[in-house]
Length: 331
Image 1 (cartoon, helix red, strand yellow):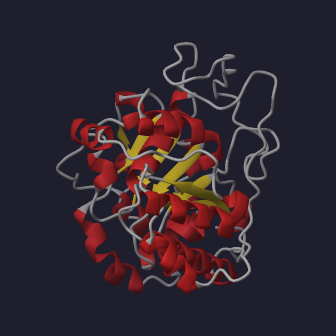
Image 2 (cartoon, rainbow, N blue to C red):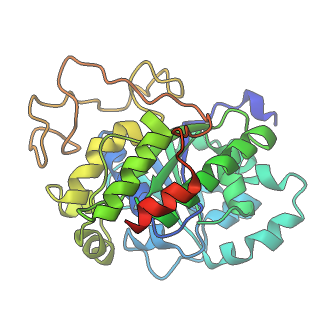
């Protein structure tokens, strides 16, 4: 099957080489927000830890899941699991992902195994959009996710180590564009776990200066409700829609996903007709009862401009060296 002739739904990989940046939380909440708007969403958990699977109350990990689909052992429709949220299906992680590097090493086109599996299994029949939760490493599984994706969303904490990891991740994505997926776009950078810490504020300003408008204006606040939501097996946007994190994800769903339903989207020029696209109310505030997906930053009658999908190198301010960034972090 020629992959060039296959019509894929928008596939968005949520990835950062640095762990502990709310990557899984972002993937799960983004998927739930899109499902609340009426889109058929598949959340693919490719992390061997299975946190995205567990965050929807599916524990222990099931015997059949993502790795079986990638290797062709099980059809996609037999591996997908329904969730408590209409329109949202889960392609769960399994313990087999721990040996994925060895298993895919014998594959003739190991970096294209996921994309070929999605093509042969007609992923478009099951989803209007696919969200992939990637492991925090640049191994074979992450390579497969980025080779299959139309865009990558980068969650990042405003701290010195995460900042350095983000720069490394950015350049790795640029390298992957040259070797595996020339059409891979960057949906943007979503700052997570923000707060009133002065050091974090300094690093956040540095990140915004370096990456420009690739960094979303809205950030996700540090919130203890995120842990509580994970324990209860629900997205924090559902558990506490008025909270710092719960209100942040619905505000970012349309930007955090490069496949925004805006008709100007370069990745999704023709939104699926089955989607229930409701116009936000005039308030659009946290917990608004008239908005199906909770808060939003748009007002009726105004089309929001999607993020510019580019992978240009981060901008450096004059005299803004690595040494200066480290000094800002220590302050």
